[in-house]
Length: 329
Ligand code: UDP
Image 1 (cartoon, rainbow, N blue to C red):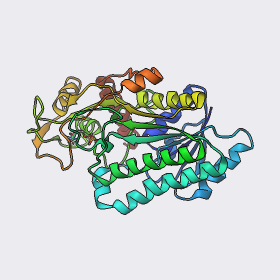
Image 2 (image 1 turned 30 degrees about the vertical axis):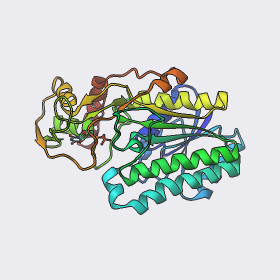
Image 3 (image 1 turned 180 degrees about the vertical axis):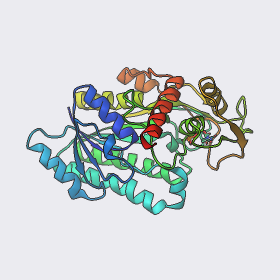
Image 4 (image 1 turned 120 degrees about the horizontal axis):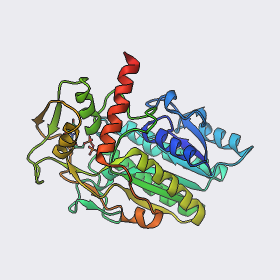
């Protein structure tokens, strides 16, 4: 298939591009490089600079590609995704995340592209009564980021129904790790996620890790999350796209391992491999105690199974970060 990856210079977009190319597919990347970087774009992907909020940037690519072979599937990764920032800048988040999706869909309708794979998030579940989340559970986001994702999901469903399109909406849980090539990984300036922050502590780039909250109603008092390796996640995009293309069905799928690890368990797993200091700190605002994916639907429909472990996420993130550190020395 030929895939337009919007946001292919970012963390998950670049990993998905790598997996698409490894599976023999043709990839075109559109990115405004606001948070992504040129070096993350696979050498075999064609790159166009452009902004998702400008329809002509998208139609230009779709029409240019049509001359050789039309784009079969558009994948959308070009979202803003920092929860605390979304609370401070809701207008920016709605404009980029929702207006961006609306514009992209309009361009797809104009150019007759019928398949969309969309990155969504466990944040749509908010603070669920049942921490093992299934796709049909109620959605109740507790921050603007999650709201923009559920609004986009709804918009995609309505547009798909009106214009005969197929969608594959993927709700990610906690994504971590780096590609085996160590050419791409999570390398934003301001990291907020647990595993990269542990690794920065292990590499001496920060004094210590703070564990946010030790009084949650969990076995050791720290929050429980479902961690998934970015390569497993990227492979699910490839299978999901192929599935909607082959069957004409639409999908809404959770992507997680189905296993929960507490923050303390992640810290202990990393301490088995690396040395670093940590402390217990107050709770971080907006953190639910426990979120785990029921990913049975992805297993049943796509035959998808995460292959990589928490240790693989920790080791690959460390190796990638160490390489980044050496490159900047
Ligand atoms: N966390 C932590 N210390 C950190 C960063 C994160 O204790 O420096 C905790 C955070 O409070 C949450 C879990 O690790 O309980 C996962 O947080 P992360 O930001 O990685 O992902 P989120 O679940 O918020 O999407």
